[in-house]
Amino acid sequence: MDPFYLLRGLAIGFAIAAPVGPIGVLVIRRSLLEGRAAGFASGLGAATADAFYGSLAAFGLTTISGLLVGQSVWVRLIGGAFLCYLGLTIVVASPAQQAANARHGIIGAYGSTAFLTLTNPTTILSFAAIFAALGLGAGHIAYATAALMVLGVFLGSSLWWLLLSTVVYLVRNRFSAGGLQWVNRISGATIAAFGLASLASVWGSLRRSVVP
Image (cartoon, rainbow, N blue to C red; front, side, top):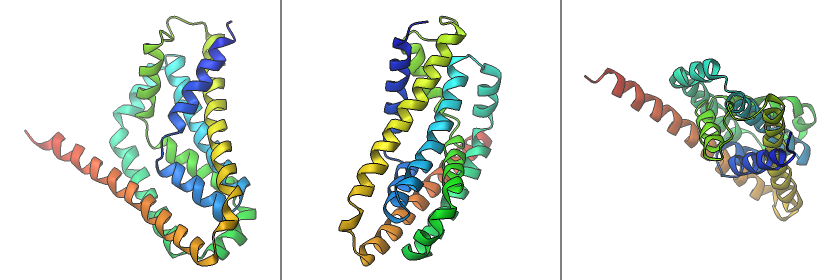
């Protein structure tokens, strides 16, 4: 078992987590308004989902991955609707109220981002493509090595979320109460926009499937 695979998995997890999307916006907002713990817990939820999809690719669980990708329309529909709900909830809530509730929301922060990340089953295609490009398909590596890579994916993703939540938390004092309110409005609207985009893609997929 080559420990170098752990470093490869770490690099893959970091690279997949880094692009800004709805999870990144959510982690930034929670780090600013609810504290570093809530922001990092949100990132760990996403890292857990990344590790799950990475394991499907690394261990070659084609039956499960095929089922998830095959049902991606319905999964994205649920995820898009939840993003819209979450975004609108953030827009109308006050920063003070959310900060007061943050102490009781660590598990919810973790669970919500894990759920949102899992509602993008095509992520497994990204892992499969990256592993194949590196010659790391399940047919070419031992299970112990695959497990090491999945651990690396989780650690790499977690490292990105730790860095992001910490940096955002350190600059939170530069925001006034009014500024935090605008963070709520902008981040909530952005998250809702991601949800609408997901719903629009679902609608497009359904239309193409019924057009002869």
